[in-house]
Image 1 (tube, rainbow, N blue to C red):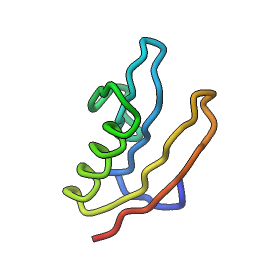
Image 2: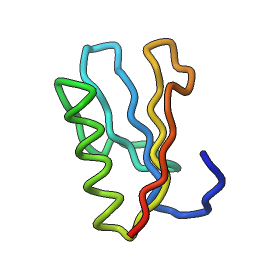
Image 3: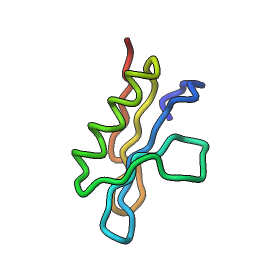
Image 4: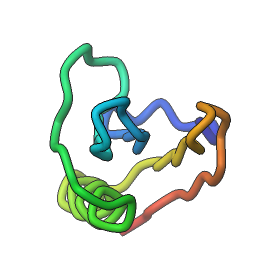
Length: 73
């Protein structure tokens, strides 16, 4: 992540079954599943803003970091 200790930080990534995942970092379960990357990013941003802000990491199809952003209130 960008350097936040915020427990609301999230990662969006592509799953082998063709869905995009919005996952709360540090948890083994999926928060939400989405048909498109943009839907998953929108959901992750909404969760972060409702939770007081945090870091959002988008992983590319190969699992590398494509983009990181910090959402603040």
